[in-house]
Length: 140
Image 1: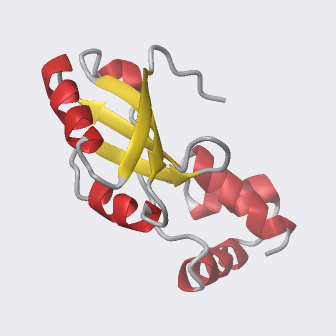
Image 2: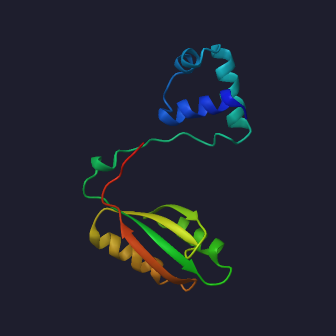
């Protein structure tokens, strides 16, 4: 990956709907070059998909949180697998330090949120957890 590839990815991260022509114009490169680079980045697995970013404020009643999780022994992969099946878990991150995993959790109500975190806490592979509600998000 070179500087042009990184610039293309930066442009797509800002707005995945940006046209190839617009990216080519901004980077002062031929449209065909941008198209070829994007295709190569998709084919080699660097770009694995495109998504929609939703403003957290657009759903004011959604409860969002992060849950720090400590697992028993070598069970982190098993916990990640189980968490991936939860409709309330939007992402899981491995980490170092006191916690093994960080889970992003989302629910439509406090009652749903309570059920979701209690279900996670009941997993026998989890030795301890700490949950923090997300109050505001600042995007850069």
